[in-house]
Length: 420
Image 1 (tube, one colour):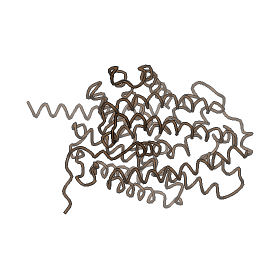
Image 2 (image 1 turned 45 degrees about the vertical axis):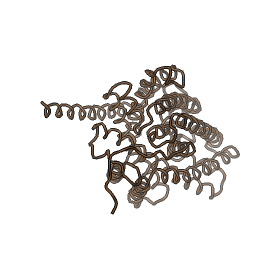
Image 3 (image 1 turned 60 degrees about the vertical axis):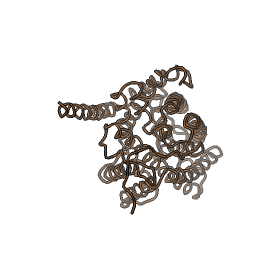
Image 4 (image 1 turned 60 degrees about the horizontal axis):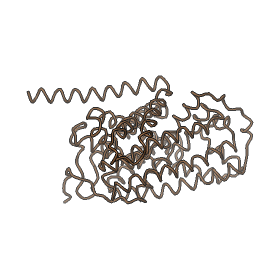
């Protein structure tokens, strides 16, 4: 008979290669197959500039996340470091933004996967089946998560390699379609879309309690995964602009499929479809793992119900948190079309990184691995990208954040009254 879940520490099983792969699986996800279209629509021929801005802000955020995770190598990422450096309210804001934003993103990844592999009537059931399957994989243990992510990353990189080769060697009629005029706001909006194709490095930090030698492994894993992703995205962007131009990318719902269509053959499109499906699964798999660990950390401090703080004695994973998350994502997939909710998700993740940057700025010299200026630049970058979001996304993000803060205030107030 299997013993019941108990609270306790997670097992350190992830080495450098595993941590890098999980970071790549989070970043080289479905976003790269879809984010270039709205980015090109916003920035036009300034798309590459938007990519540079997104990459720079991502680098600043990554360095802050890495050095915080090295000092606080436990599950929760900026939720834990925010509590330690800035206080419980700041930590809660980071954790709440991460859990809510990435839960919505998880549902979107499942829907994106289904869109590539199933006809319209079956997309919802297939998306739900994918969530159930990957939730089960996560509950079996973190080493199985890393193994499956490695397979999905390889498939995704093969598909992107085909896109780059075809894009650099072919051109289509779409290159004659003019892109939108370049403007500072358009470049920032493009950076906002593209930033969230980079944001997976937080998953490495949220898994800090399961990384071997975290003080050394986490900073190396974060910077390595981000550097590889930057190179891949730059190659994809250049190939896309060469093949179909900014106007063609903006006009296409699936710009990378439009790129390989310039080859005039069927097999590249099949490869991209398979790669997009694998990338969606990879991102979903890593998100479930990361959200589960952040929920675990919040439950340990009673910022979420303590029931989620259980760690399974055999698999050493927060099974209750992951199962509950899987149920919530399945419900969202069934009742909602979340493709238009990217702004809401973006708001939550930018709030998370803002707290991380401010927390990193407060670290003592002995704990710092990077110049303090990078933390300042990262925090300002988060504010700028939030300001560039559509007004509806900002309002929705503020409302959900206030609801979360209100929940914590009500819980604390009720607890004091019971004690009094």
